[in-house]
Image (tube, rainbow, N blue to C red; front, side):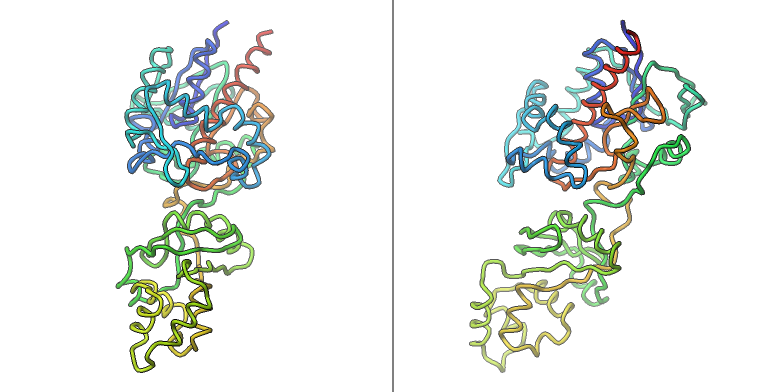
Length: 404
């Protein structure tokens, strides 16, 4: 028997759930506050949509922090391989980049989204935009629309409203007080995959803001990774920083201080650096000696000076040691609105095995609303797809049991 399902939120989790539920024979309506759906999905694909990751699956499922065990069962339903097959079925071929990240061959999100929306339309899914959900009235959903307040009842509801990053695209976390009022346990939202402020001097900031720091290794409690980052206004950002953002954020919360250890010359041993530095002409300037001995560019030399004001007075062996392990102090994460994603959200203990809220039978949740986080690289999008599938399957099971 056909049941009515309301999905609030037209991002990847909501759209994936809609497809799954419509194929199961349910009447699905998606409600979204924005003028169009999939806005964050499109933004993610602006410079090449990183749809998933091709690393070994056993390693892949360890990328979700404390939620690893819970998400493993979910990811098994929508693996990276399954996502590539799903995209291909929509006419989008994918390829694996040198880093293991998976991209559409066209390197754009818009063709995939258009094909996806066309499929949803063919399945009978209705999409209503400019419908901002403002809460419950008993079992009724209440929306604010351009035509005034609208009240909707459905046999089951899925909330897929995102976290708190990219507010202009619709993820504004306005759902937090609504669900808290319903007795739902919510872990405070925090920035994830974010940049950080550093106590850079005005001179360093004005000279190097916007410049990349290439070919470095960074070490934190998250481990050691190699890549590059960017000096931002009063801080640092970029893919290498995002890989360490959760560890740096949590260390700051725990200790009040944190630093990221940088290897500025990952291609050379400390011994070789020390020997090359020792051979330089003592009468030459510090920058000249460094450039000739190590090949460091201006921004790396400036970082050394910024972190270690007396660095030019260090003997060759100690200078080499600092180049291989420069402790860059971090002062605070950038605001959550600037983050790529968020940590925190609906506690996993607040939902049952089928992603239904324990305090509101018939209301399910998926995507970034839930308390999990992952690095960039396709992991975020994969988990949004997978939790959408899991919640949809849970809704179908619940509706069947209720009908039976």
